[in-house]
Length: 237
Ligand SMILES: C[S@@+](CC[C@H](N)C(=O)[O-])C[C@H]1O[C@@H](n2cnc3c(N)ncnc32)[C@H](O)[C@@H]1O
Image: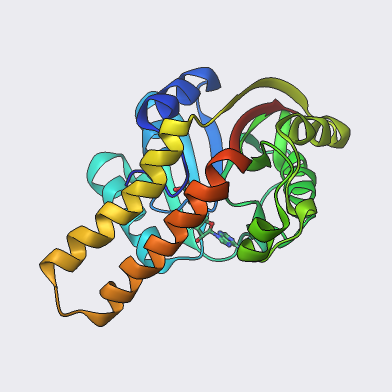
């Protein structure tokens, strides 16, 4: 699996082409996972990237890949909560936050907090590339119960844009994950778990993981696929 979000390879390339970063750009990714997106930014642009995440293993992977592909002065990956990293104001040309608004705050104000914090860190005309869930239609109560959330956890696709405008951003571009992107993401996890189980057929943790994923896929097919969307938004300060 490339990304821990319903982002396909082609859409990722397209989004990167839309960024049009100036030379010597400073780029921050909040919740950078294995750093895959930042590696592609480094390939496409003359940029310095800073990736922040709280998963030590993924940060190490991000770092190792970067070390073997790019000049050491072009990247930094930090394993720490974004809330504990001191960052300069009005500094970044681009901030990426893909599936990680919960890094700033859990619950219904996650997006608002992310928008409010990142706008301070961006230079004037700097850009925020946001990947965020939205409701395709009002969620059924049963689905909310399974997720353990209330409806106000997400907005609509348009609602995400309206909130960013309210905080002071200009919306430049927005698109959504296709059904195929979602299917590749969700079924990708199933296939990966089964591949691991084939390699270690007596591993009880893997057995129970595949069973959990079966139940999750029932929920996805019953409700999630029609109800939960994922949007990509390019906002300008
Ligand atoms: C759903 S994953 C998305 C990862 C990546 N953006 C991608 O698309 O593959 C969310 C990421 O946010 C990171 N994260 C969660 N809380 C965080 C925090 N307080 N500060 C920084 N990163 C955080 C996790 O470590 C995880 O890598």
